[in-house]
Image 1 (tube, protein in one colour):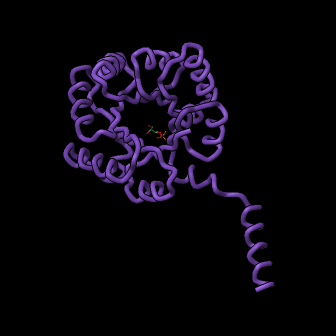
Image 2: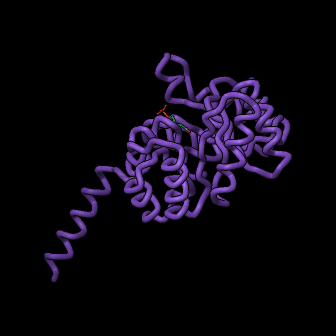
Length: 217
Ligand code: E4P
């Protein structure tokens, strides 16, 4: 399972990268705005800064919602760095743009996916990644994890290569449940990754080992 961090915060990206287990980064316009990164030039520079920190894929989202605009923006984003994956929204023109990028050998992440039918379309268009937003489904009393299970079954039925990127992961249990269901990738905040470290018995056991060592030395 690949671990992506879902942030545009360079310090958090560095912290995750330093752990040695980071496989990539996802961003979106809201995450950029949260870090105060505004204006096209600054946003493009920020993507390059992220690529220079991590070894893996970095999703960069188009803002246009029409086919020609998405193609223009996506080509510019893909040209920034070889690690860039063009993030395209799940809309009609987005599917056309994903198919175009697929034919051009440009990798894509189909974002804002909330149903298995949408995920099927993304795979048919050749998306590299599909991003079902599980946290946002949970927010409206719909089981986000069930969507991961459905997409896994559909993709396995037909051998689609599109990787299931569980997005809108909010906490550590989301990560574990996505791993159980066979998601290829998860993207979440740094806290969802660091939370995997925690167990009180680990802390108690380590304290005991150190105390016993001190007794004999
Ligand atoms: C994924 O690519 C999105 O950036 C993200 O996971 C959305 O998460 P949120 O629902 O917590 O905003």
